[in-house]
Image 1 (spheres, rainbow, N blue to C red):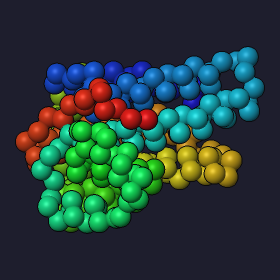
Image 2 (cartoon, one colour):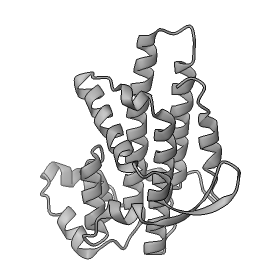
Image 3 (cartoon, helix red, strand yellow):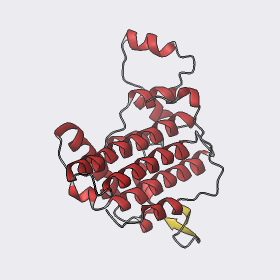
Length: 233
């Protein structure tokens, strides 16, 4: 990890769009890049032990999954015209009277809020399944990886890409983040593979969120923004 210029990855991630502080993409990008800055600073500190550095790397995985979770939840909440059958399927679970009481004290409860609140976003396949239902039973990840979007490359030149062209192994990279995070949290297992590809993980995750945002905005003619009063941890 030492010597890898992660700042170039962050600098590359320049969007010629007006991102607000609580735009889902902007909010999650801030969370993610701050987590990477902390992890790289810790890892490259010569005074700290290998054990501390290993924990820093795996804490980064936790923070990366958290950033993605924030992103996915707020994208769901802010788009108001998902597929009708998708709503029905994802809202078919029963809840307790106590949960219903708590929910309806919040006068801003929406179908989107309920889906984001009651479904889990810490598993790669589960997230794909939720969004596939929301977009009308299409394969969400296939839609995303084939989506064409403008990006600025390392030379500052704007180019038009398909996501698969930039990161052909994106599924392996992103899914391994979740696997390594869950193994660390639940079983205290360390994954050297992730440590050796952290710069790729950063670039791929940022691009992943950008492509999803662009895909959903173009599909639903919407530019989501996050209501700061409704951000939940």
